[in-house]
Amino acid sequence: MTIQILIDNPTSWMVPYAEAWVHEWRNTHVHARLVHKVEHIVKGDLLFLMSCEQKFTETHLNTHNVVIHASALPKGRGWSPLTWQVLEGKNEITVSAIEATAEIDAGPVLATEVLKTEPHQLIEELRDELCSVMRQLADRLIDMYPNISLTPQKGEPTYFRKRSAADSRLDVHKSIADQFALLRVVDNERYPAWFELNGHTYTLKIEKVHRDEDSV
Image (tube, helix red, strand yellow):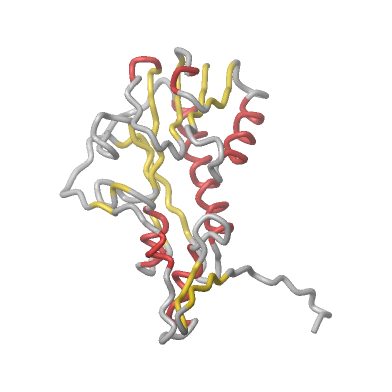
């Protein structure tokens, strides 16, 4: 088999996960590779599109071109589905592996898994959990290949919009507890939490402290 991962942003947080997948797959499959440009894709069996910022149109190159999207499609098409659902208070999120099509997030469903989160988890932990479920889906499709069934999406689609810096703004008049869901999903480096007070703008970083049982 020829298995490929496309991440067109080489600085994406998903890159280390993809590198690990490729390294492990190479122990069991003939070809496994990570590419950052569409023109570097070769003809193959399974292509996983992870965190792609540009529209992918070269669907003729692979038998299956797979998008893994963190929502129960057709509900939750669009941007940052995990973040939006955490903000909604969900702790069980369906993750869908679908065939890439010209219409974004509209392709037939190949497989699904459920991501379970805990209310204390911050963005790094949420990403770990998500990529663990994504890997489960990828391995399932590899094991199923070439006998992969395509199930059309059913129902009325809903869409999540693209998040901006404004979405990481804290309200100084609300408590930390009231805004903890937002603090869970901010990225301290890429899009930190921020607030305005007394005519100035401040950023606020959050990280979990792991203390030993004997520590104070």
